[in-house]
Amino acid sequence: MSLRTKPFREAPRPSLPSTRPCSGPSHSLIFRRVPYKLLHVLCLIGDATGISATDVFPLSQARANFSELAEEVKAGAEKIVTKNGESYIALIDAPRLDYYHKLERERIHLLLIDEVSKGLDDVGAGRVKDARGAILAIKRRRKA
Image (tube, rainbow, N blue to C red; front, top):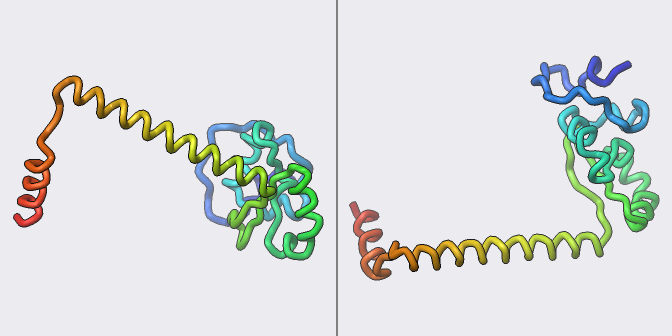
């Protein structure tokens, strides 16, 4: 039975642009419990991210098999745990979490550098205002 003929919820789903079949395993019990939107995303990007439908577990199953999941995560897999049919948490190992935090800090630094560059361009082009005058204007607008 195709997943598209047995929706996760009874409400009609919006049409999705891709009809590419998922390269994941056949429709096991856990595969059917994955929300349709999450499943579609996993099918589209699963090959690129390494996450497949076999990496998605309901909370009850994750609770029962936590040691096994932890070993798989430590070996490099990423797992998604669902609750009430919606994605709830992701399991990743500590070094990968540190790596993700470093990436986020680098992204923030790049955004700050970009804002500084725009500010310097504004100063160079003469698009500046006196700070005291600008603050007084804001205060007057707030009072009005």
